[in-house]
Amino acid sequence: MGSRVVAFVSYKLDYCRHFATTLSVFYNGQSGSRYSYVYLDGYKMTSEDAVNDQDLIWIPKDQSQVNLTAYTASGTLHTVAEQWALLDKFISDDKYLSKHRGGYAERNGARLPFTNNIDLRLLQDFYLDYKGHQHTLQLSLDIFNLGNLINPEWGWKYYVNTGVVPLIKFEGFEADGTTPKFTYRNPRGYDIKTISDAGIGGSRWFAQAGVRYIF
Image (tube, rainbow, N blue to C red):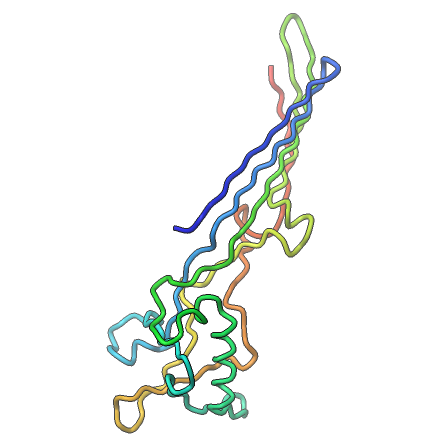
């Protein structure tokens, strides 16, 4: 399930008999969601009826543990040596993959980075006594994901599409009909994370103002 930390702090100051200011801060920190490393078109290794992109990869310790084959894309030949150098670097740079070389990736074994979110609320109350009753005009300002307002690289939330990362592509079998061939088709490297930017739960900060009359 991962870890989660929640904190809430609020302070209200009444002054001059007719005014009050309240400042509240809410913090939520939690582990990122889980995902799996799979073969692209891996279902063709076993059954045409199986679901695509669900076969967990073998994480090679060295080049001898993955049978790469050269391929051409956009007129450029990508050699076996070039692919292995890139794949080996990706595995070494990945916290999960680097610790599990020489075995199959676990279902939902990898996890996205820990996320931090801070929301702020400012309330300003104006009191008025009228015929023995207190009337209050309240102005509010809410800022969601305050960290992203302070620094555009803070407060990011991530996701992986469908919860799987197709890292290695299955290209068929050798002439013996049993030895699978693979390619690693990310010559420029890539970040498997996608920044969530949708609505109140996204990475972009936003604010809202409100007015309330209490009587």
